[in-house]
Image (cartoon, rainbow, N blue to C red; front, side, top):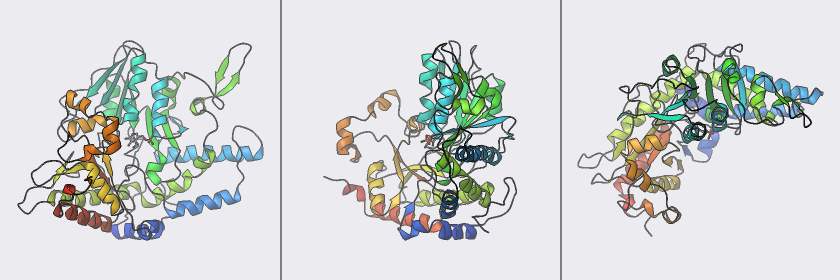
Length: 467
Ligand SMILES: Cc1ncc(COP(=O)(O)O)c(C=O)c1O
């Protein structure tokens, strides 16, 4: 298998096994082993394959790209590359170009914000979302509330899945928006994409936050047709940073009302008459000069994913997740008591490769996550601790009520000194998160297992972080 080739068309089924993934790791991600890294934060950011760098370098070396939006030759080259990237992104996600447009943004948050700030909320509108929405989705409530819409959260069950006993409330009398993460960045839960149809059937426009889903699952917009989808490319293939996209049904884009214009978004502006005229569909939403060199670097990244096949990536991640879940559940003290509290699903059904958990001390109390992250860092293991910009899932997982959630608001002195990290001192307000991706191999999981067992055996929280 040649991972640098881009001849493999999306949608074609072919098999890539674990041995192939080991080869890809050695060939494309050698810097991980050269630096002794155990990288387990793929939900934070994907990593780029070296073939992407080579292809991008070769492109930059041989092309002259100017600022797009003009007819001069270097500008036209940049425009051509940007338009080619739009077509490539649509193809990757199986979206019909007649139906969907691609708006390039700086990240997923800005793709989400474009919808929130332009959505025609008014009194009587409804903004509905599950409690495990990322902060960049929760923040849209400020646009909704400012324009008089009501905000409704759908509850989670004990596995951090949507509590299906609670139906989606019907849309309000005004234009209403339903947003959900296709995959939770806290728990890895994959919410069913059938929610798109369900929400549409009760009157909503639907925005899917695919930032955590798209890196390791095939999102096929020919099957589910949300109005809007937000993604960030660095999460999918590491490089470039600073480029995300809003994929939007053209008809849904037309229903948005942009609150301002900027260079690049208008065909005509007059200071005499106060008139302005927006450009057609996607460009109406791209403020200022697009990140055209970053956008030019998308083709190698998409090509790399195609060469692996997203179905193979998903299978690889499921196999690793299965092993991780088993390893964590087997981590025990000599008396057989569990050393891990897992949050979210305990198996691989409808979930991605993101696992939140806390370590427990020998009497079952949670070991502050900060201590574990710090000790992991000393072992060159990159994992994440906190609530991962996902307060609703954190509140549910850690069983925090309203008062306790208030109690978790960081106070400056505690954050500065890290004192909250002392076992048993105050309510623990976060968790550990490990996440796997294309480059992960079983040796990474072995290193993690050895670190966690050693941390527990040494009762490291009794000494780590002490003054
Ligand atoms: C589910 C989800 N949504 C949105 C975001 C925001 O993405 P970005 O930081 O690229 O704007 C993230 C980032 O972690 C995420 O995981």
